[in-house]
Image (cartoon, rainbow, N blue to C red; front, side):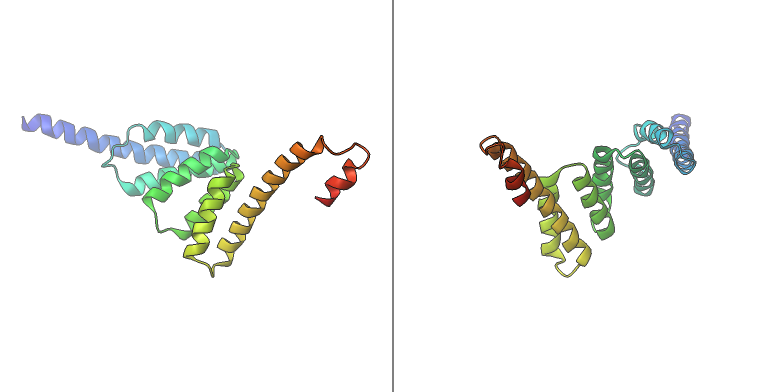
Length: 168
């Protein structure tokens, strides 16, 4: 029985070493300009993690994968990875700002505006937070103006339409 326990313990230790090795391979792939390879490596290693896996390793894997998604400009995937990373680092202000930027880039305007307003309520003197809140509000208004232009546009006579839209 003790031999079986030893085998299981060594097996789990080997898996942990493998995850660290794959994480380093993914980091090298990202640094060498192969973000797709980094994503693939992290995705494979991620499936072998357990709830008890090293939180530091999880953070490193999420950071690498988020950076790889940033390199490929896959905003929804960046938001997903930064969201998971924020759950591991809830007090990381810079990470919260980065997540908000990507939420807005992903077109999740309502969620971005809600989060930005909450961040301003929590840190009203932070100029970066205020700027991001302004960006979120502006994106929200632009979306509403596009909807309004679409609705009203057909009702405005063709001859005055360019002048009317310039006024908006």
